[in-house]
Image (cartoon, rainbow, N blue to C red; front, side, top):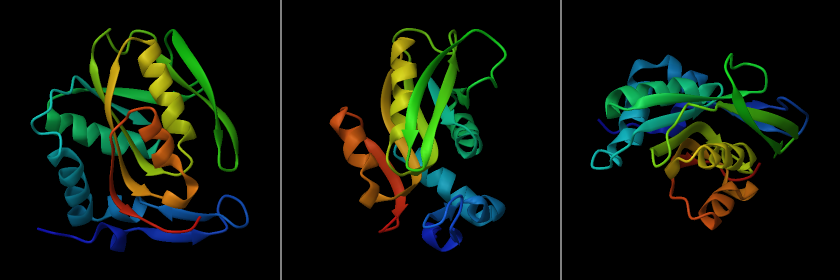
Amino acid sequence: MDVDIKAYIRTIHDHPHPGIEFRDITTLLNDPVGFREAVDAMVKVHDADTIDHVAGIEARGFILGGAMAHQLFAGFVPIRKKGKLPGETIEEDYALEYGTDTVELHIDAVEPGDKVLLVDDLLATGGTAIAAIRLLERAGAEVVACSFVVDLPDLGGRAKLEALGKEVLTLCHFDGE
């Protein structure tokens, strides 16, 4: 079954700020065919890989990452916004295309040498993904690839992740911001 993933993604104009074209994947997640096709496509390229953990970035990365971890028979690691994880954490600040934030990881979420696949819904400037990579690497893990449903190539995130030596996999892209 080949599905046009892009057809399932709606654009919400001026969200969360004027001038932002928000690419909303909740419409993809809501459709059983689209959701299954997206997860299957994101997992397919990793079938032969040894992935110890899938790390999902809050919040839509949890949905995709949990489904992917299940199919890859891997553990799931949440990367959350500051103050949301109950145990001892490490944190990393980052810049968004429209502000700043902090993400955290449980200090014992991964072991040194664990191979981790980083997952989120969308790659824009790369700030959140870079912060997540830094957290995972500080904890001793190896981020073997980064997987996203949507790439916004004009915002430069892919180039930043590739400059860090990370393989970047996406299902579709939208030009412009």
